[in-house]
Image (tube, rainbow, N blue to C red):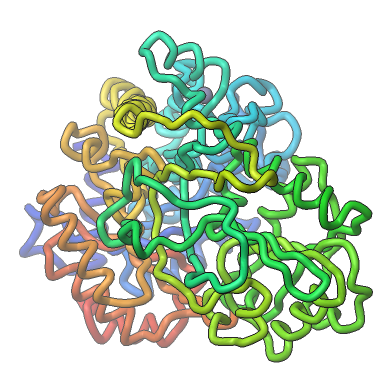
Length: 576
Ligand SMILES: [Zn+2]
């Protein structure tokens, strides 16, 4: 045991009075932690840790690498302004944390480099980007490339070697969705393995697409342009698609007064398939050739879901060369009914908004509705707008979509695909992509073992095993089994405790070894924006998790640890 380790252990004993259990490490009571915007001094860092310790927390996961930028002194990557100005946040946390007998883990956002400033990794290496089926780069790294895995390991090992951290922590160690990657490297490599990416590119229907659907069902008046067909792969039985005879339509065209409504009956903006962009352009050139394009903004929806879907849809349209202004739902009644209004995954509507949109379309405008307005389907105006009667059940899967033959809005071919072959090809592509992410973790582990054997390697991972693997190519149970990480922290941020229990049961079945698990629990919930949870719920979920004897728990994140939650923890699971 090094001197530093010995001091740490001694401090832990003092701090926790746990002399009796000296052989067994105290359960981790951890929290994920962002550096506060106004926190630029060693005293401020120590005060944050003081707050953690007052809640009897004993470990922090400090976010130090994000958007490709370092909150520490780096010879490899650009540094935050405050580091350049002399405040080395990581060094201060390590120093103050160890003085207080707390563990300090360095937390990395590995694959996602969105919002990166100039001169970060993808600016220097544009060919390292994950690409969609059109070849458009994303702001994520493609881990298929050995040089990307090497870069990632260099970044994490630099910290592990320079700073006395207790661990290095992977996050966003995955893909954003199963819709990638079509970069030159991936195309070339997969060709040598006889996986044909063009089966999933989606120039025309039929094609396999990644479908996350909050569908609406029971069409009355619309023309069905495309249907959901066979399931190629599922992400867990719970969200498997309904049987064929209960399947809602995939794309519909409804006439409402003088206007027309195109409905994508799933989160089509998450797909990058050409066929969807072409369908959209065909619709616009026929029903709204003069524009303008306007993106509908629903304050009622934003309260619960934020503005992500509006931003994603606008971004997606911009990549197709389609730009427009934002129109608040409350302004519809005053707006001239012309052009097209885009409805970007709006599930909640304010009073009068559905009627205003229907009347806007009836007056001669067009609308493109993306994903069903599921919580408004009992509203007669929404029913009339879409020509649908009710909302369906959420489902998610890789599915074959077919175009209806008697229409010319959706590009289609007559070739009927071989579904068995599609399933086989998809499974191999998934396996290959999972392996690439796993190899990125393995490389860090091998170097960590060799160069800094006392530092732990851990990973924040998706809470449900099937969606982790099929949805974001993150086969983390394998990382645990093959000892590529010391423990996994599944982000089990469920608002409903029975859902947490389902996930814990799954870890029992799939992982089994609770010494390799730290359960990630949320301290916030969405209620007119993110707010701290009911303390009783936090206590209930902490107790439920600890009852499985995991290595501990980790909260997301410190900002939401208010006094009532702290007090409830101190009176409950975190009393001495
Ligand atoms: Zn790639």
